[in-house]
Length: 369
Image 1 (cartoon, one colour):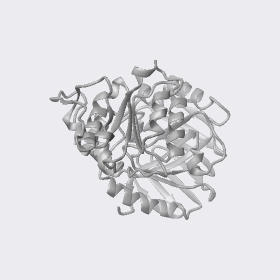
Image 2 (spheres, one colour; image 1 turned 135 degrees about the horizontal axis):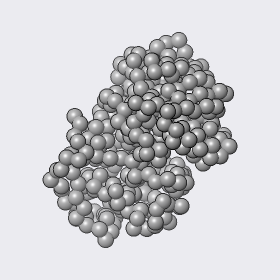
Image 3 (cartoon, helix red, strand yellow; image 1 turned 90 degrees about the vertical axis):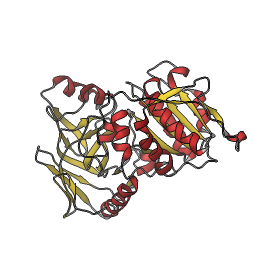
């Protein structure tokens, strides 16, 4: 069910609710803020996040990070934490620093050090990747169950966040078992994509199906498996979306795709009738010496998503192949190189072969969940 983003709902007012049975563990709630309202349509997605994806326990402390633009969605999440009785502290980025952030505020970093769970629901701004990496460095070191919800919006809350993540997890587990034994994956589309990823057995495959564990934080909504490829060669017609701040700028590329070519795991060409898109993408992927290097090869597994919507947070989970240039998340995959950038690219309606076995036809999995 799609609910128009601009549909006006009767908001729910949220106050900080103290749990009288756990007075020593109530946290600080929203601090000086109160009476933050949210659309009741967000409740199902927020409940999924807290109870299914993060499996928050009443005794666990949660660090909640948001911004002014995402207050309503975050209020729905904290409402579920309050119902559970879990202590939390909600931080609004603009209360602590001007944006775009150069560094993540110390108050948040300190709070993460004493938290078992964290959520990050904000709207991305240009040149803030460094501050997000500071956050995930703490998350990785402390093995915090972390929900990463960059550019979450009302449409995603009532679509992708309502997915059956247990079913998505079952499918993801089957697909990852196949690719872990494979030497290569080939992907083709009628739009002109034809690429091959040769896999490196020394690099780990990760499952981020929406069921978040201490071993790997995950984006929400979830639904993908990924690795750092050994080498990618071929053509990718990006008729879905591109990531980072370019996603908000250019949206869905269905009517005006970006075509890229890769050789020896490096971007060699990028072409689009939209010259601004072509130029911005090329500049982004040449920020540092590895910004043009394929750092991620992934397969989206969220079978409850029906189409690309122009929002990378959800669209990279859309069934099919996506890749990313730049940072390979080496702490998880085992890749030993690095980059200061990371940008995903998404297409539509893939045919996918794992070695010689076809697992997807015209965007539909041939593997049962």
